[in-house]
Length: 77
Ligand SMILES: [Zn+2]
Image (cartoon, rainbow, N blue to C red; front, side, top):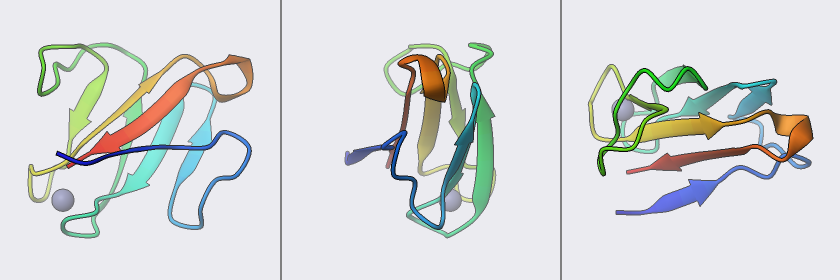
C-alpha cells in the first residue's frame, strides 16, 4: 500500500482540509470524497477515522484532529 500525508500548510489543488474534515481525490479512480474525524469508520488495519472510496473501494482516507492544531490527514491505496 502507498500512503500520502497532507501538508497542513501546503494543500495541493486536488485536496482540501478544514477543521476536522478533509477532501481527497482518489488516486485510483479520481473520485472526490470527504472524510470527517468522526471515528465511525474502521480502516484497513482496524483503526477508526477512515473512509473508503465510495466509487472503487480501493483507497482509504483518514483525518485525525484539526488542521490548525496538529491534526493529520492521509490517504492510502
Ligand atoms: Zn476510488
